[in-house]
Image 1 (cartoon, one colour):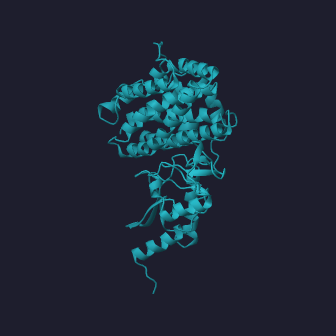
Image 2: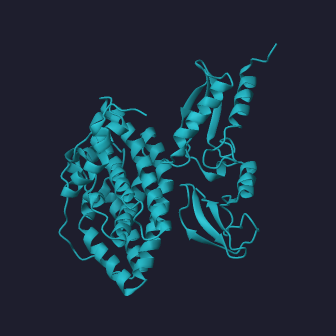
Image 3: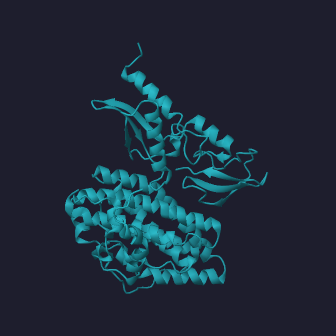
Length: 250
Length: 157
């Protein structure tokens, strides 16, 4: 991998970090204690993955930035996550649907990264994919349960799908940095992961009794640092302590 | 004269590591859990390689510190600690002795080949999953439909 793949690596790392932070917001607020535990555990996996990826990105960049430095001392426009992942949690159904869409994308992605000729990236991905498979199973379980539950739960998961769907193209956006890595075989183009995603999506929607998506006007920009206003306010909370005490150590 | 060969040294280090408990499941050692990947010796001296269970497991830092302390206290301050990711940790790396210790502690050990999960208390196979996640990333919450006790199950990973 080369220094110009720093941003591509951030795209993967920031997806995990930002979704992990969003899930942490459920802690103490989830519908049941089991869900509370589950969402916190999903968050823990994602933040663990982000830490490994960000440390590697920092080394690649060569400016001495660690995972903590990259997580807590970048402004919103320096983040490369998809806008899907920074969206507010809203109700539980929207969180479940966001997680399902992310996991359906991340599974084929990390399977491919685990085969990357870059050994460091491959070993991080091989470790992470074992966790992400469980994420997809968990999200699919809840997708089915909400879809086949009551009229109210069905209405909510259907609304959640409509809400999240417009951000899915942002998840799959191939940035210049990503394309440059794909050209030398570090990873596939995200567009090439789309058929696997579509299969998982169709199966999940069928389980939940939801209709296939209608065409939506896509909103893209996350991979280029263009975000919704929600990212800044989320980072304010996430970063306040390290920014107030930048040299603090345990 | 004490045996100072590399092989003897590795045995002594292994004995120290076998007494380091997992911070969240203290009945089982880090060796039983399969976290100690390797003990070796090269031109720079001896080293111990540890591997994390889950990427975000909060116990990883504690385990590293506990291992460091145990080595230092046993006079192995010069032994280097390495963290390796590959090959990724799997519940297959838990020793048979570790599985038995888990069961006696009330945690159903991972059994990838078996479709049902026996209750660690009464042994009944009439059990059900309550939640895919339990008190730590590595466990799920189950209950026994025979003796009605809830229990943790070590997830197959």
